Image (tube, rainbow, N blue to C red; front, top):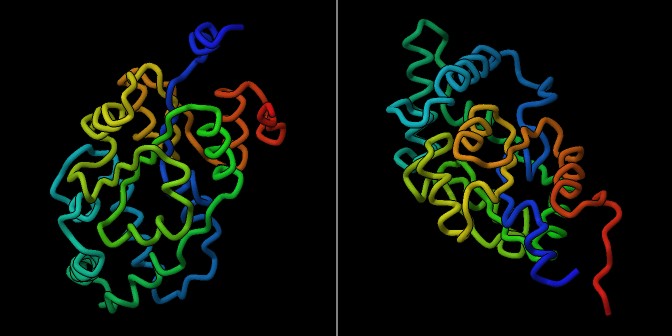
Length: 232
């Protein structure tokens, strides 16, 4: 097979990965160690997440956080005030911040290896993440971002967030590819649906270890564990 025909046979030109829940182990899973004092607040936060996250734009604190208009501290100050204003026992904002975000994230080694294989095979790769402006050190220190990704799109730097179609268009523009030649991987259905509406092939990631192998199979045609060595 010639180089031209091999390129033509490729199903994709680029793969776009979410960060939390894709490049990391699943978020908010297995949280059985929460102090009972904070259970109501955690439920309050998750209800907010459920009710507004799927909206492309908005003035909710969660939207402002992920578009860089609020710091983490400001977000938790405001959330704890809303929680108390709703008739709940007041909670210290810094303690709440530690309970919800303080546990940190754990990188998914299988997905890191999958991205490395895909990029090594000549595909363009992008990281597209909704995250606060205080969150960059987290993902920068957790995975080798510059080694793995040709393009990094951070919602807090761009002032827009998934599932706003504009941020997907920006990503493919910077990748230099068309949307219909992209595979998109995210853990949230609203983000996956928005990418599919733009013509991308999509995978919703419920388990990053399983999906890491699925992505490699879809893109490279073999299991992630069966990495084909480069020719000498």
